[in-house]
Image (cartoon, rainbow, N blue to C red; front, side, top):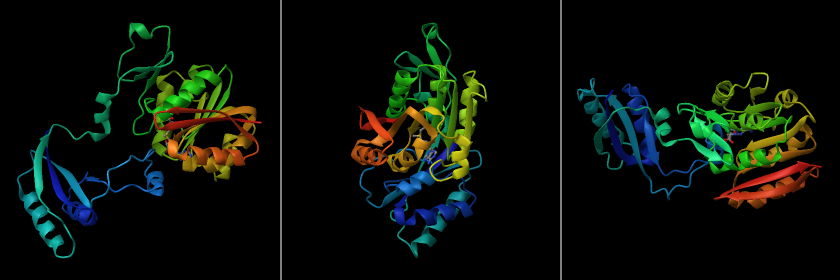
Length: 318
Ligand SMILES: C[S@@+](CC[C@H](N)C(=O)[O-])C[C@H]1O[C@@H](n2cnc3c(N)ncnc32)[C@H](O)[C@@H]1O
């Protein structure tokens, strides 16, 4: 299907007005391009895992929208132009110029898939579900993953670091807690390497769906991988469901701001001697996380590793 893509060059100040004007004209699926940095709070509510570093915000923005090329007879564009002129009367619309291009599809959810291919971490092959099993994978641990809209293809440095730690610390028969399970990738890896059972939690409902699907893809039963939605940090019902003093390994690849309060809560779920493998820590926050861990007298840090600008801190419950 062909789509006409229109881009309005405008200002960050006018973006909300333009979006609602387009909405009133029945135009859905609007994309906004700007350099406004998300706050940590916004990132949490939008399930954005890692906030990208953007160039400085110069106040400019682009609002993109798509119209089915078969239905595009220019009448809608006349209305958009009129709408922009009306907005000019009370806000700074900036240039307000509209550029046009054509695109084959607007399948943003799936477009990234063409760039993600099978890769290895140690002796583990991680392959997208849509790629075939090849001869060279035979005899190796193979993980088939489709993260859906949840985070966790395994290719991010933060996920890779936890996987390396699981390869090191899983000996067989472990109970694993996966806080912020995303696609379920860490639980599935732990089970592939011989863990007995994994329990995942996430705030994002899509993560629950993706984890179930990825377990099934990898012949893991619903009894082996249980997943629930909720926040273990402050929700007693979630804490109760996870259980107490019962885990050999807890992994959590989440932002430092979440790991810090988690480090105070998590030990009650861990057996003595259990490992707490964390990632998702940007190097500028390493010391802050280490300090938070040290405030919990039950935790001792056993390893700190780096991959690019990301940090893994592994601790043990005394
Ligand atoms: C970076 S992703 C990690 C996904 C996957 N575990 C991996 O390593 O690739 C972080 C996940 O943590 C979830 N999350 C953030 N805060 C959380 C919290 N307090 N409790 C549970 N999950 C949380 C997000 O929704 C997201 O799915």
